[in-house]
Length: 219
Image (cartoon, helix red, strand yellow):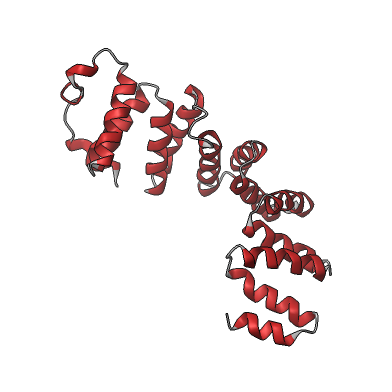
């Protein structure tokens, strides 16, 4: 939802129930935001998340950043994501920190800052985020660093990324290693990546197996 619709929300003091005045404002706003979200009142939830983020609540800043990013409001989303990193994020739920860095990388990339995107992708990938590693490989490939892109994609493919496996298959296939390319494409297809089926069929044709190629294309 568009965060702008939250301007009709009640004033802060009306939203804070009397029973919670002993809690920090940040935590109170965050808990109420979750309650409103579960009740379907997303406009109020967004406004409460904004108050919680402004009061220094890391998870609220992260969640608000995600909502804003999905709505294309990159500048404000980035501000809240950066605040989440600055104030700190808890270990649970898992991967919140890595997801925050990945999202900042995506925003920086969308805003035409590949160097900034690379910084965040590298950080999230170093923490084990497979999606960030895949994006990092794509960025490295686009900027001509194919050898490093191949290394990063291989790590992501080993960790289970079907997209990385397909990209890596293209690189090794161009080198003439059709056996490795086929193995990677089968991994991608078996993981449900339908875009890899045509590439695998082409490999089977190059390896003189038109029957499987036709069967693949009929799937």
